[in-house]
Structure formats: C-alpha cells, structure tokens
Length: 152
Image (cartoon, rainbow, N blue to C red; front, side, top):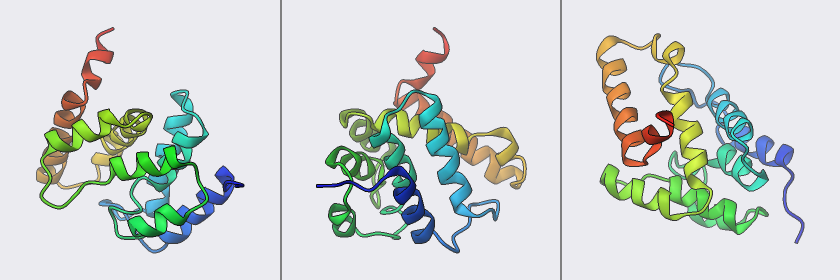
C-alpha cells in the first residue's frame, strides 16, 4: 500500500478543518501546522507528523473514526490520532493513560499542549478563559509526566 505523503496529509487536514477557527478566532489550520512543526522540531517521525496534522480531526467531528481507518496512512498514525481523541465525559486521567499507552502519541500531545499554552496565543483570550486553559494544560502536562522533563 502506498501511503499519503505528508504534503497530502496536510492538504487533507486543511480541507477537513476548512472554516474552523480556534478559541482566538484564528484559522484552525494554523494550530495544526504549529503542532506538526513542533513534532518535527522534537524529533518526531513521519507517522507522528501525520498524526499531528490529523490529531483533532475525529475529536472535532471533521472525520469519523471509520473515515480515519480508511485513510492511506500507517496504522501507527491512526492509533495515535485515536489515542489523542478525547471522548465525551472522559476524565483527564483516563485520557492521559491512553495517550501514554500508545507509542508516539505523547510527543504529539506534548507539541499540542505547547502550542495551546503559548502565552502569545493565550493573551488574546479573556482572563477567566486564559486562567482556565492555563490550569487545564498544566494539569495535563503533569498527568503525562511532561513536567519532569523540564527539570532535567
């Protein structure tokens, strides 16, 4: 089987998120690009970079899990995307355990959290939202054990 190239995965991700914006009103594709670039900068492989482009596609109902399974991308990429997909009513602890259990997913989530918690990105939000998200992202970093890396 021939897999989609990273350029083709990017094109697909941009298409399925077309018209979507982030909490600050910016085109959602900017977030996807930042996460993919963060994964690349952290030494991630092509499967992880592809997962970064697709990481919110199922969670945001842009693709179904079935459509994801039909994509011509490695199963490892699909597994990471599904691991990174939060489920309705799921606890942060359960989510973190799943991310940690799937090879490659932690690096993608680390890049996602880094972009989500970027002070410049948060600065445009109202104070209550900024505080809520800052606490949420810090808690997830702790659950994933990412804060231990900062102390090394």
